[in-house]
Image (cartoon, rainbow, N blue to C red):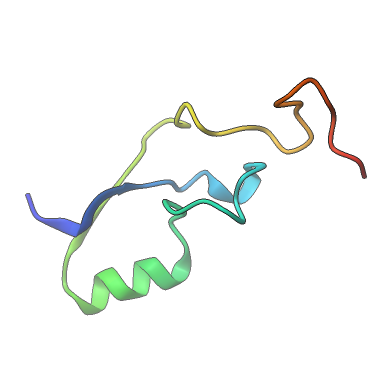
Length: 65
């Protein structure tokens, strides 16, 4: 099956610590572009291994709020 940009998109990006840097974020813009191109979207059904909860330590330190 042919999918938009031939990649798997992440619908869980909004609550991920790395959301600002994620190149797989399934944003509204990506949804519109795929619809315009008349292509399906492939997306993760579970949080991928790279997903990190906001505020969770990734290198032994907590996020400062």
